Length: 171
Image (cartoon, rainbow, N blue to C red; front, side):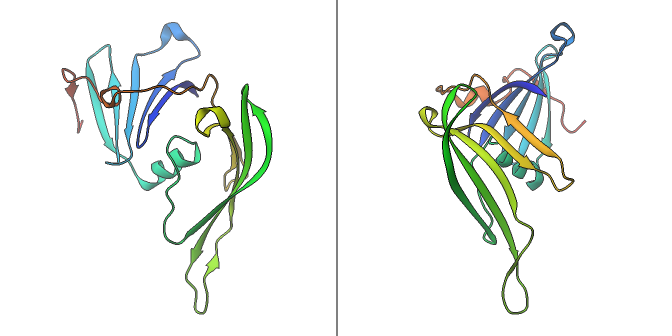
């Protein structure tokens, strides 16, 4: 999937792009991870639907670099600097990130399988991730590339449906 992503954590605006631009429907997805809500906004019809987000959605947003990591108390995370690199035309630092979730045992905590990811953070973009590679439990590899990344000042209203749009939740 491709499109434009704008972030003002904990808010995210995703504008999906279809491969066939002529057939694309004017939809924007607005995520609010503070209030655990997502709104699908349809500009052509001036309507939106709102759904509740789960912790799984929040975790995926952190994995994909949309919002900063916020670990649970039983989670240990560390970033290991590997090298300076170039990713998507941005000078970056490549990190190996390891996450371990500890499950209390009888005598000591024992970690569940660790999760690893590679993260390229653009040094001139306030360490914004421009490429992330991680592995799913089903042995699939996910590569997230952010091309044309840049910093900008965004108004909070950019992450909300226009006031005149009709809320059709729940449908």
